[in-house]
Length: 379
Image: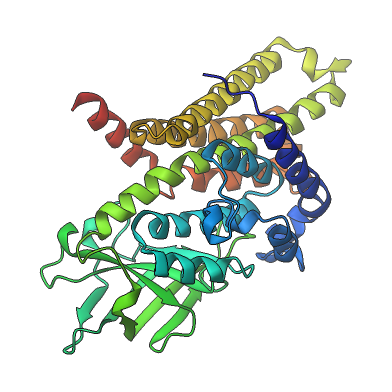
């Protein structure tokens, strides 16, 4: 396996890195404080085609391979994980349509995103997190059989108030369970569909996170993805595809925290010499370096397997779980290396630590990832 980036990939990474350095890092603290993207940033991200990286070329997107997308998200993660989450949510919301959409659905859906719009993936509910089979949002088929009426509430939806189009999962069986889970495309402004409260989060504060409320929301039959009852498979395949990208953002967060604490350790003097010369600090630095390199390789391996058309569900879970744990460990230790200065907002490592925590939670908690890994290994 060769994980070296080719010339085209290196050029893409350079473009994104320059964008991060000029348009994201200088405003990261402000975006974190205000809880929203910097004015004009979304347009600049869109201008580089970053909102459609997962969309196939035949539908107007970049059609990038998973390894390249992961490299992009790592760079965005170094700048601001909230921005990275906003962008990555478009890929997450694109995969259900790629997996189960027909040609007409793909054309209509991706035309919206190609107009520099955001999308959202709506699975989680107030009473439904890791247990996707317990989705209580109801999808009742109309008497004329021409559509469905949705009723229910979704929560913790990234891009909720900003997205133009949504993939919403609802249960079409009165008895509930995974066999009734069904996926639908819902447009912003659909009658009976409203945006609920916006969440005030600990980390990734630049990203928008809201409730979605459906009250007798009509969805035409042509907006159902796949067959009725296929939603669970669509959701699980989507999460498999997206999990390595959570790992990539995690690596970016860890790398940024690592660089910040290394630079600090070289200039912070105690007992007459830089703390970088102390063996305990060097041990922490070495451990962080090893963890980051290992996490990046696991992400690249999962992406490579996906790009080769291989079964990669286990490797996706490993990449996501390991990299997010590494991000948490590295950011906590970066704060420790910097001591009191690491704990104040004058330096970015406290933000990295807050941002890292969600990586262990969303798109499948790391406890769920360990169950996936164990089941795929044992059975």
